Image (tube, rainbow, N blue to C red; front, side):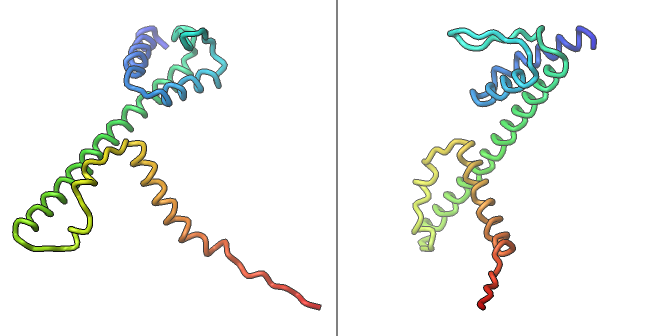
Length: 152
């Protein structure tokens, strides 16, 4: 591989690392550790010279960083969509109250829901939990069987 390609990968990795969370940085270290690459460690943390890494490891790190950045963009996009939907629900509630029409929407205080700050990782966890629960209830019947007891 040419030096210009390596230099581009170095630049992409360096700029991408600035946008990653602590957990994502730890995953990058796991990639380096699993590939038996050299690193140095002291009181200030772990230091990695990208020149010491082989091209396979560099490619894995670069791909992981690109994946993380794409994931961040997707999460931000869905958060914007959720905020727009929340705003539209609140606007609908306001229109209903302005017209003097009462509905079941009064049971839920939508203003309190809108003010709650939930991180994107928590939203993902709750969504994942919801779908796992639905999947479990549909698949549990296939695991349940009747025991046949023989009495003699």
